[in-house]
Length: 522
Image 1 (cartoon, rainbow, N blue to C red):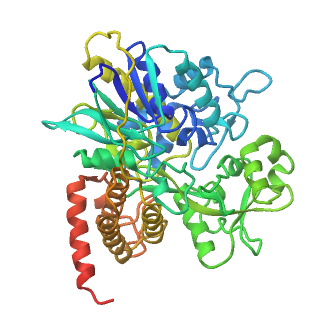
Image 2: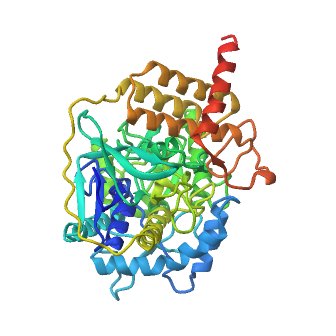
Image 3: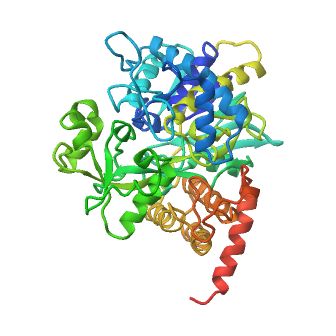
């Protein structure tokens, strides 16, 4: 089926921002769930980082971004994004996002880990993602040239002579045959990979499929090994794990163990506000030795925690935890993928016809360790850059009829046992702390899952991304940012650069490790 509409895969912050930027050019947004639900953007609690405070500057924001990124941030990208941050906050405000303000109308700013200033613009404490998404959804609904295909999932990219020419789509909620949509440009904004792990803060459907389908089409993937584990997921047994936003620590909440010790004090001068990778490893270490790490908000917030952080209070209530009277048990959980489809400053991938933005992309902003609340900012900035670049490559906008999708019966559902098996492998061997032996085992087990499972495009996309993460982690023989190797615990200055990998490269390494595992006695 041919359409003149720009096809956008995903329906989160980056996707909707790009769609609005492209309007009135006709756009088709592929959304597996009802618009506004199911995207990681809506779950984001902290807010958007921007230099808005007196004394703060975009240059200081860029320096913090580069420092947190542990030597692999692209300085040009950091400068660009931080310079544009303020105008995106103003645009979202005009669109109706109810950012927190003080009595004089100034934005209320919070400080999060590794920021030198309070610069996180938020909504009702921990509602930023949801409220920004509501404002975008409302605007998109009123834009006649944007068509949203709800309940539809992208499962592959069409390639002709090395160029992306369209998207294979199928029903999201039940198996169906696939339909090919051919369009003039494709923007991949389908989210990250956190759901590939057994303990994650990501929505259930966010399991690396977007990155996987781009890799299977031949795109270069950058920084795949750099997965950020949020230090303070609420350890309540829920899947996904609810998030205890970093803003709580910005307000003075402390991390304690079962003995009541503030274990971050001897680890880092910034204690609870140390970079996320350091805090995550400390929490993981406390968990491993049975000392039950907890977030204590009592002295810093008291009863205010319920009013000022409603999402946290609601998650605690579901678990029978009263944060006013007791500390909140926490665990490190897969939260954000710094890696993804490599893009240039315009959001272009290595494949003509394919652009990427948001968590599915690797722009060079985050390096080895994303600075808190830079995720939503990057999605906003690169959605606009990609949309403008797409528009510049196309002719004048023309009227396009709505796309009518008629899916044939058939298709193959993903085996939930295979997905559960994959998630456990990733958590056990490609998690907060890694080593060469575990990464080799992970690659061999991923190959076995693929060989033993019923064919499924969705599962193949997940397995591709998992392979890329594990292979890149095995190849980087050092520790840097979110990537920590217990067998290479120090950073190697010679490896202070971004990684670039194709799926072909990763599969070659997987075959090598699988063969080695088969020859090694149990």
